[in-house]
Image (cartoon, rainbow, N blue to C red):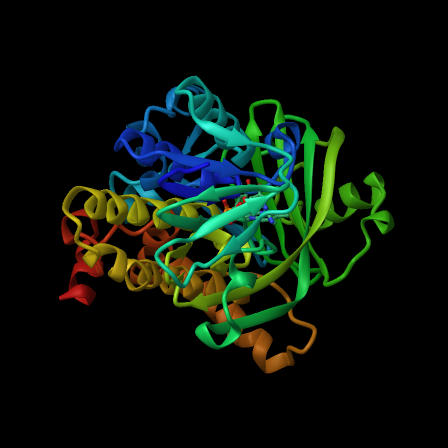
Length: 405
Ligand code: FAD
Ligand code: DHB
């Protein structure tokens, strides 16, 4: 068997890459370890940057997203008995985020690939990357061989792609956090119109949503926490304790339909390429979810990879492919910093002493009172423009313009 681009992994990165390449007339085969049902049900991220939405719409997979996605023009930071709105419409005019579940994006992409005759294979268990350091790379699986021009490793953090690269060809930067997120999906109408990021002495809590009938919540819990220790009543009690901290706010409760614990980690492997193997999305980098950047970074990577491959096939020039890793890593490191910053701003650390706690309060007060600090949060949260180092001054406030100039 032969294809132009062999893609490992049918997550957002692999599926979108396959579809964007198809729109440029480039063939690919996607090999996924799990079943279609499994990847379509996997509950994960939910916040799409404006650029992610524009990318999906431009790729022709935005119909349901534009119909059902919830456009949000602000978030709330809640601490010290008060809520503080970060108002995107004022801080970053014209920019917003859309709340739409990652598994819905995955469903839309699979449907689009299959409708276009795309080759997406599920339950392919033993994919191996071969000869990536040569100009004849190939994938093997289940006794079959797939020859490719290039391989895209879109198989997430625990995939085979990055693991197949010789250790001395990669540099890894990593930070683990002493806590995890317990994620909950519940059949209950959201208790607020916008997302609430709440700091409390008991730990962080996040109120999010998926639709007018479905809410999504996260609780900071110790790393390695066993979900069996969190019966539904305990989850609701803890969410109430952390969210019902401002006058007049009552948390609506309902049936919990899904729950799980996700470890928190910052991780970057550089470069995002080894010969003919290109890493994209979680295969190359992980952020803690506080900044809602993981899925959005995966989309940004495959945009760059698509352009580079299209240029290579059209002109024979490898210039953009050679620049792929460096181009992506600029955005990756900005998101690394933002995600680490949001995480340290909003979580309680057991090691914190009274001094560290005071600094954290001062930091929260600054972000909620200074226009310049709020713009910094807002412009990173809604997503910086693609393929540029600095935001377009026309899209920012006078305060931000001063900083840029
Ligand atoms: P993935 O979505 O991980 O897709 C990789 C695909 O490759 C998977 O389908 C996997 O089954 C497949 N695969 C793996 N190994 C192989 C193999 N050997 N052969 C073939 N296929 C393989 N981000 C947020 O912003 N907010 C959140 O709340 C949030 N929650 C998360 C919860 C969990 C449990 C996880 C793991 C991630 C979460 N993230 C969250 C991060 C976000 O979901 C990821 O950044 C995003 O999924 C990245 O997409 P991807 O396509 O790169 O990787
Ligand atoms: C969601 C996830 C995030 O990581 C985040 O920062 C905000 C919302 C969500 O799943 O809805």
